[in-house]
Length: 100
Image 1 (spheres, rainbow, N blue to C red):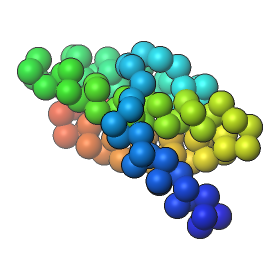
Image 2 (cartoon, rainbow, N blue to C red; image 1 turned 90 degrees about the vertical axis):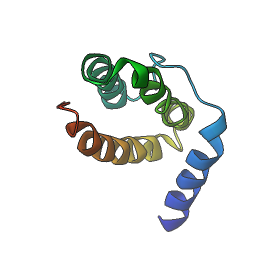
Image 3 (cartoon, rainbow, N blue to C red; image 1 turned 60 degrees about the vertical axis):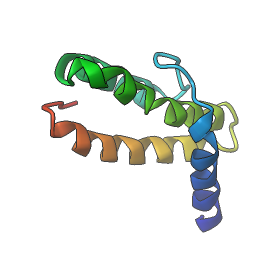
Image 4 (cartoon, rainbow, N blue to C red; image 1 turned 180 degrees about the vertical axis):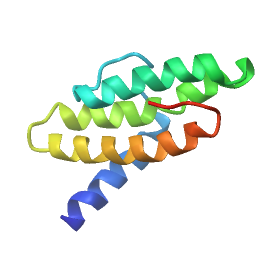
């Protein structure tokens, strides 16, 4: 299990420069729902000058999840990473009044 977590972390790091666009489905329903709610909240609550950057910051994570979800062998890792992202981002987003 430690190897899988390390591999997933490495994939996240490698995708920082190559993201997927906002709105593209990941193949993990819970993640897609979360990203939709996150983007709506950012558009509603974040200052206009920061909205594009906040939404684009999620693109590498969206791509990682989508890539992992595309393979049945790594889909469980996609679910795990999605859960970690949601936990972290929900806490951070609460500071501007987001709740999902």
